[in-house]
Length: 196
Image 1 (cartoon, rainbow, N blue to C red):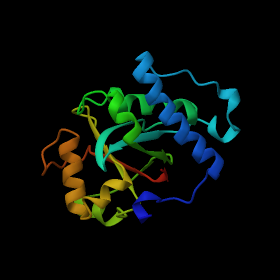
Image 2: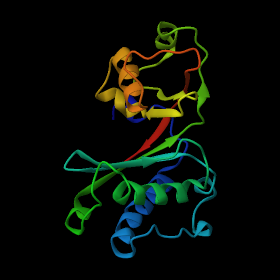
Image 3: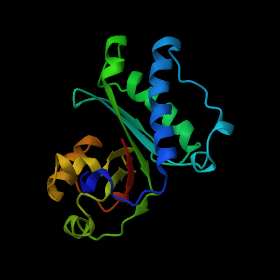
Image 4: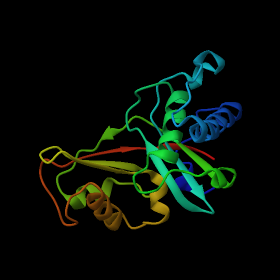
C-alpha cells in the first residue's frame, strides 16, 4: 500500500472497513435493479459508521477508472454516505455511462474517508506550494468570485507527483486557467483513510 493510499492512521476497525465495502457493492448491485440507491438501516451498523463523515467512492474496472463521486463535507452518516456515493459513482458520474450488468462482478471498490478540511493561509503560489504535502494532502481549491471549485484526493499524487503540476491540474479541474492566481483564491487540505 502506498503512502497516498493511506495518508492517515486507520480510524475504523477491520470489521467496519469490510462492512463499508459490502455496502458499496450492495448499493451498485441494487442500483442495477432498482435504479436508485438503497436505503440504509443505520441501526444495523456500528456506532462508528453512523457518525457524519465525508467520503469518496471510486470504482475501477480492470484497473481503469469507472466512476468516482463523493462529498467534501460530512452531511450524512458515514455508511449512508458510502451507499449514496457508490451509487453515484456507478450511475451518476457524467464522465462515464452507467455500470452494466456484465461489469458488476469485475468492479473493484476504493473508499476514501475524509478528515475535516482545514483552510491554508498563504501569501503567494510559492508559499502555498511550500505547505502542500505530496502523497498526504488532498486539496480543495475555490475561487468564490467565479463560483469555481475543484478537489484532488491524495491518491491523485500517484499520477501527478509534482506539486506545481498537481496545483495546475487542480486549477484546470476547477474551471480556471492553468496560470490563474488571485488574492481571493482559497485552498483547504484534508487527508483520507483509504479502504479497498
